[in-house]
Length: 375
Image (cartoon, rainbow, N blue to C red; front, side, top):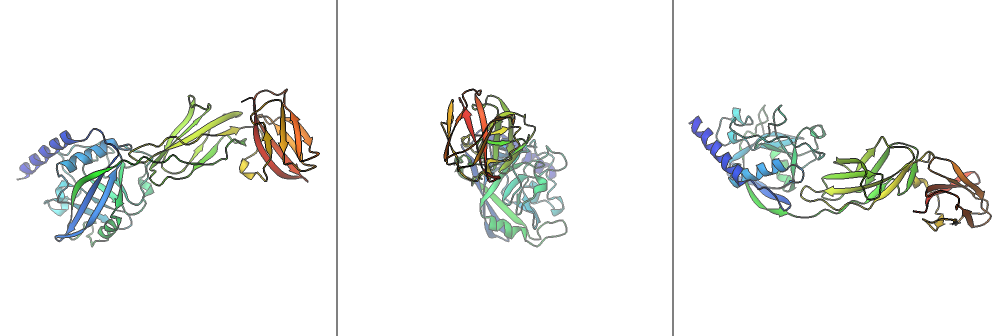
């Protein structure tokens, strides 16, 4: 009987491999109907992330296509952590074998990513071998940060999370097996083809100056964002990219930057099925001036033309306000005291590039900003 079961399983998995989808139009969605004691517990709908873990998504989809998961169980429940299922042993094998899988099952290589194990995330179960994932998966009922970068995230719950919460609280034995079997039946129900919105950059402010050779870049989260791709370059069309990373949150610390350099940065959203366009581009400067951020600006000074050349007009100054202009190296290139609300500064002898201005009034910082010559 055991050999017959193994042969049937092997044949089933071969058919599954033939039916695996090569591409998806977006995020495929599946209903996981859960049953206990012949009563329906509820339906958990999940969507998978082919943009993040294509091998795991194709494997799951192929198994659903041949009804592999039907009558398998959620065989492990750990309150405050997760529910786990999908082992073929849990159909009819002894409960002591549930969770150990079957040696005839093909495995899927790890697809570790920046996606985080948050509440509702679906991830691949495995043993000590990082490439040992097969049909078994788990759904987090709470964040599990210690799994990030160690297990392959490939989907999330989009509805029915309350049923996962109910399942995880089922009475269980010392091995976390539910005392009464909780079966699952999984069917494909469609695709979420939503394209995410591009992020809105937050900080540092555009054209900010700092002497620090690291900069914390922040942007606003998108509702369906799973991973964000950050690019930092030394040119506006991003042909010379010096940093490109994927992160699972909404900030990135760009370190090891080169002094006296202007940087351009942008971010795009990955929702698991599609990428957004890149955000608008912002710039920042690594200078020798020693100013941290332009977010400390006290009041608005209007500089025109900007960009420009020759004579620059500084407006909205106060009588007696001190104006100092620096180049990127921190060298003072102009100093004067305003005699009115408008002051003209002749920069015709200065080379093209970006300049920082600061003003003080009665010995206290009043404003700061950036203007550009010839760009």
